[in-house]
Image 1 (cartoon, helix red, strand yellow):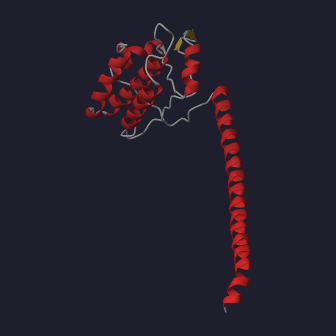
Image 2 (cartoon, one colour; image 1 turned 135 degrees about the horizontal axis):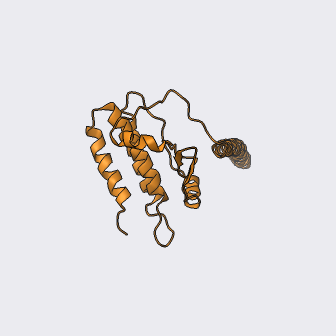
Image 3 (cartoon, helix red, strand yellow; image 1 turned 180 degrees about the horizontal axis):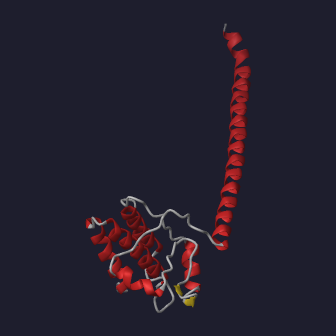
Length: 196
């Protein structure tokens, strides 16, 4: 399986980004890298399988976030989850509304929607990043967060139960060992008395 054009561009930009000193261009690089990573995660082979592995997607994501962490005003992190990969494979069409180009959304990735008139400005490197506003989550993202919270709570409860069982088992074993030693001592006691 060959490397796609998107992956080649992503690798080139990853290699060039650490040498970039201009903060505005570096912000643009990070945004472009994130978009390319999202596209790459959506790419499929003719058999319908993901073009690159989840481990490779996570590796690229970590490299992008390492670059983003060097920014004066860091951008929020991007994680590509299995649910995001699955939902992206189902949502492959793009639509237009209110003069903005929209692409498939995924709960794990933050996507910037840019009006078509601003596309030329972006390619010239004059992108202003507004990171002062919080990221707004859709209902699907909130549902995913709530699901993860419930899973975490159930795991915590299960771990508490397992710890309680382990403690009870340890006490029972300790008592059993003590009782066995007492029985052995009591059985040896008449022999010891006779020897004295």
